[in-house]
Structures are given as structure tokens and as C-alpha cells.
Length: 218
Image (cartoon, rainbow, N blue to C red):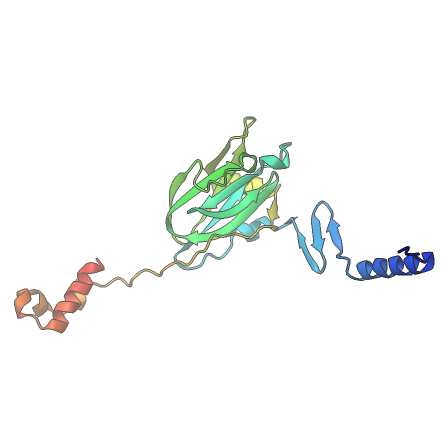
């Protein structure tokens, strides 16, 4: 059976398909600092006032941690994956800084070059004790052998670096600062003196529980 195709009908069908695809085409923007897919738009980095970074309010029982990487000629594959307590924070690129809140106390910081492709969030681990209510600055360096290191720096050095870097904004931090508030400090003098003059077997159950609770919080 021989089938004859009408060229006009073929052209009409092709035009209809093209119009349908055009109607559903997704707008894509891929500029140096601006990206967009459809209606979703974001910037890779933005300028931030240095004083706003250094004077940022720190939530109760938390710390403000700032990672800074100086601008250099390193390629993007040398971006450094930074993690806090085994949670991804940022893949920091040259000329950028990143800020995040973490819980006070012991924090594990790690850094590894993205090009290593091992996804080890505990690589090159460092342990720091960070006091609540403070801001801490860490300088990120990637050497010629693609090895990444983190070094704590003081406020003066941080300010100088921040004035020549921009906030990296295109990634979502996995660091979750769900910090527990400290127990209120109780004093032994708040309890009646007679409680400390009686042996435990003579204390009322409620008083004994009170003493044990107090001791556990010292």
C-alpha cells in the first residue's frame, strides 16, 4: 500500500510543533553573576558592608563563623568545600566569603578542594572551641598542589580581607544551629540550710529530688 504525504500538511504539522515548543520554552540566563531558569533567579555573590558583617548580631548560645578566601587566579575547580560538624556550608570560590551561625562549644571545621570529588566532609579536620556570642574568622587557602587549609585570623586581618571580597550567595548551607540554651545557674545558698544538715534518708522525696537536680547542674 502506497502512502502519499501532502507537503502542505507536513509543513503545517511542523509549524504547530514548533509553536508548541516555543510556548513551553524555559528562559535560561547564564551570566557571570546572574543565573536564571524560568522564573527562578539568583546571584552568585553580592557586595556587603564590612561593618555589617563584623557587627552582626549573634543569637543566644551561638557563634558567628565567617570563612574568607582571597581573590587569586585559581580556577573554579579549586573551590574549597567547607563543612562544620560534618555538614556542608559552602564551596567557597576565590574573592568570596561565607557567613553562618553555629552552636557554641566544640566545632569541627573541614576543608577540601572540590576537584578532589570525594565528598568527605571531615577532610583535613580541625577542632575549635568557640565561645557563645562571638564572631570568628577563618582564612581559606588553596595552594599550588590543590590542598586546602583553614586558619583562624584576628579581626584586623579579617576586616582587611572582607573589604576586598564579596558574599557568596548561590548555595544553601546545611549547617543547622539548633542550639540548646544553657541551664540557669543555681546557688547552694538558695536552698534552706537544714537540707544540708540532714542525711539523705531523712530528706523528704521532693527535697531529695531538688538536691539531686541541683547537683546534676553544677
